[in-house]
Image 1: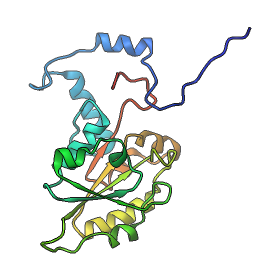
Image 2 (image 1 turned 90 degrees about the vertical axis):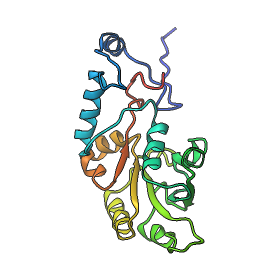
Image 3 (image 1 turned 180 degrees about the vertical axis):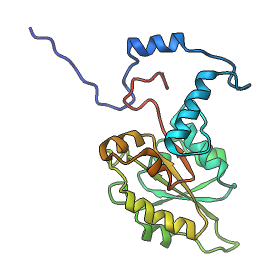
Length: 212
């Protein structure tokens, strides 16, 4: 009977560390991260910041935590976040924006995960004492529930123009941004350059020991 190899496609997070990766984990130089004494984490953060063209990066245990830290630092309690109906932050992060930051999520209709600049602009609330303050636009690239749809760069640029005009923070849930980069050849820092904050994830198809 021939050997049968089963490929697990339930999620891009089910890959397991290879022997080489386990060895790298065991041999990694470590230290106390609170005191800034972990050279491996510091090197990883510096590498991520350089790749994304950002001033600094912060390593956290999960993509959900990364998104929530980003939203929290860019908002006040009672602020509103514009995002797509099927985005990860709404559907898979256990109501964390409300619980942790007191944020109101405003889901907007999208086309296979892609929002239009016009939709964004029409849903920015006028400044009024009765309204929550529209403060953040959150996009997702690639888009999980839309089957890995890649956000077109021109669509991102048009949304950014609207966001800047109204003084809104731009956040990118880029858990799978590496996939968009590989598929299009567009540099990571080109994508990231349109956003004030960006999250990326190391457990997506790399066999990395994150979330294990």
